Length: 267
Image (cartoon, rainbow, N blue to C red; front, top):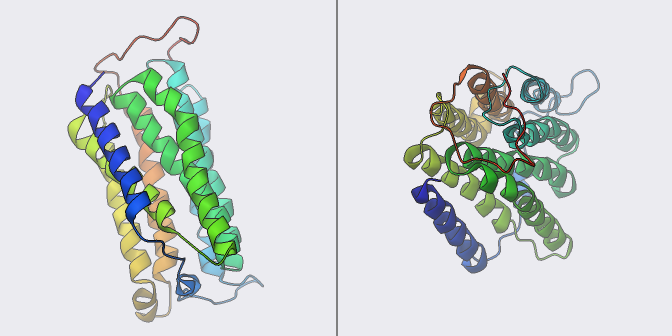
């Protein structure tokens, strides 16, 4: 177990909890739902923002097939489950985001964000497994998923009560990115190619850039909006995880598992 990694997880989790408690409530701005490209094609409103979610679906299916198959590299087969849940989250994000963009409002946004938290939390747990402690990462998977769901449900409940507070969800997303980045810097992976996690950050940041300049990019030639490009860039991040899982090798065996849950390591 990497003690530095444990303290990082504890410290960042504590800071996130304090921030969620102290930062004033803020409702979801309604302007968030005003996207630059509202063109209808083939009878589908906001067609490109809807159709671009196919990228998430393709990567989600590929990642599920990979993580459940024999080509992904794991010291213990049970280590695959955070990755399986991550790719389930990516696949569900494709459906949730497409549903949201058909008729953008807070009610449909709930389903987009709920599925995104599955992916975020599962990815955090996968890196705890790879970098800190196998059993700890597996044990945290369900609590982290429930925490993510609770943040989104809380936002929805407060919006319906006309006391909207989107901050816990925003803090949760920032928390997941911060803890992943710090683990990447401070706690080396037991596997080679652990630095592929930086590609995830790079594509995530690029997707945020596209999201921020949604209208400006659309105005360049009325071809494609920043939000459509955001979907495409964000989908490349889990593709980098796919590549990592197929090419990595074990370089530092991790903590042993009880025989009752130790499965044969995949080829």
